[in-house]
Image 1 (tube, rainbow, N blue to C red):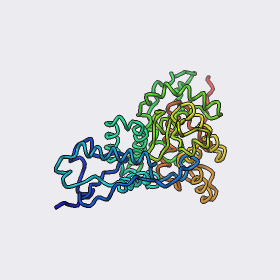
Image 2: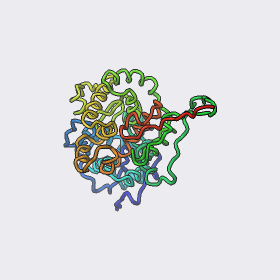
Image 3: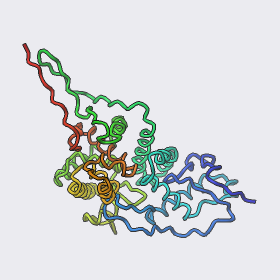
Image 4: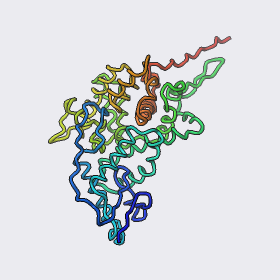
Length: 379
């Protein structure tokens, strides 16, 4: 007699570490072997949006969903012991689609607490992805999502507010009689409270991270492209947050490339997605992303708001502004944005500031200026 098996009383860790959890934090539910329905091809049934992040489809594209499902089934076949296979079968494609959709929806619409709760599963998922070379296109995308998940965990249990980390190799002190001054690097100056929510938290996390391996190789070329499009060159570091500078990075919802452009977004910006996907070419992806950032900045006249629209969709940002009387800044509407976006914006800004050692004021117009140093007269 077969037994019903639920997620609450079974862990894949009892099968094998590599099968502890597979793609997209879905713990593959096993069902009694006498009750599995026929496996039908998975269909998302949702069209891609025009702008990045706008009304993103909750389901993965058909090809990707089936590829991820096949990987999960293969892990089960490879690592599940015989006595498990005798009584249980791998989840159906419909159940698989539901589990992955639940993860994606938690990222896009969940609270900070719900996003933080994904951390254990996300870490095991990333380990599983890294163990499968054929899934390398998803690995860097997922690693950056894990960074947001860990930031959410820090945000809900911060303890003492994190101190800003001293800059490496600060400028040498200079002396003017009768006083000695040591100018601080720009990024050591914290913003006022609530100017960019969670900025200090993200600053601390980014300052302890090494640059992605491809960053030094690609950044100089990408800066030329961004400058040509009249976008501040520091924004090339958006690629670190989006894809860890992996031109082949791919997300489960269909975004791809250095700057994770959705298919419809890429086509609207002049890129082809079939039969050849031009999003995998660094130069073309960067030029399209720079143009998109320029369009969003022109609409909202604010880099933090433009970044929020890049992540959550310009429609969502516009609605948040409309529903907030007198709203003019990102901080005015941050509470109305998805938790993922509230972590994404400060993480991008902290990355730009730290990687280029520039003042946050360059990107956040409503911050007060750094106070000028007044030199006392000698004598």
